[in-house]
Length: 336
Ligand code: NAI
Image 1 (cartoon, rainbow, N blue to C red):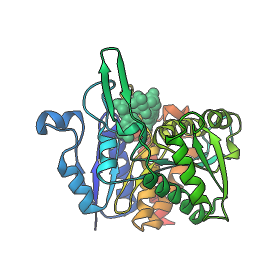
Image 2: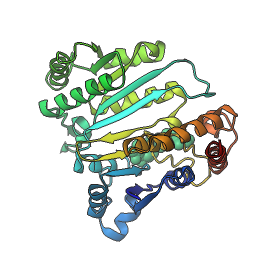
Image 3: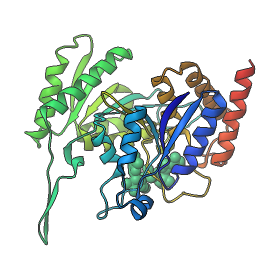
């Protein structure tokens, strides 16, 4: 039996976590979930939103499945998600983005992988209040972090039969910080002559993505642009309800959907568990459970094809109904 840390999150987190745990159980994979809590509720009891026990649990188990945790806007505690990525040095945020069966979108054949640097940039939260009317944020970019994320993107391209890596910056304006990120990508690209290398400015990239997304393959971005552009890419293929993600480091990996805790639909059995499930499928592959990962993906795709969909995809199924439909198909696949 494999030990895996499970962070249930808040908002829709517990609903989509329950769904995915049930589906994995039905697939026959034996996992001992090490359940950990984090976020606003934990502060009251333990004084901090991300207690050391959560980090220790991921360090011991090496792998975690995580659902979203709310971060207060404009004030309050620092993001649990950002802290966790930093504490575990999960330097690569990998967000594959492609069309799913029977999910209507403006474009077919979108197949983009967003590789986002996950430890620095404006996301590091280095801010100061200069005076009552002025605030500053530091955009910190280092050669070490930029080179290793560029290497990750190119290695991913080689290992996954991709043709191109496109680095996305605003190096015409942020000449030093984005300029360094771009310079590192150019240097690393020289070691991968088999992969086409392309450069684009982030504003143009956004325009091109909404007009002609099929031109893109692997996108390589600093942290903040990566955050924004990956939501844009999620929108191209059906929205946040289906957008999977993974945070990968040298020693640990935390799989989590791109979306947040969706407080607007929390507790209503309306959430789409697909993004969390697709993240969990990648987690199963990461731990070597290829057969179960494949069966779950087939069951998910068959369910979507039979027009059982949650409301974000234009369907009427509740989260629990969608989950049960996937489990029914998994059982049929097991008998075949
Ligand atoms: P959000 O991603 O939670 O929601 C944006 C929109 O997408 C909402 O209309 C929501 O209903 C919809 N949506 C998201 N996931 C869905 C799903 N699985 N099924 C159906 N609809 C879904 O973004 P928002 O509202 O900006 O953030 C809410 C909170 O989540 C914030 O506190 C934010 O900091 C946090 N957050 C946490 C993340 C994490 O834990 N990794 C990532 C992003 C945001």
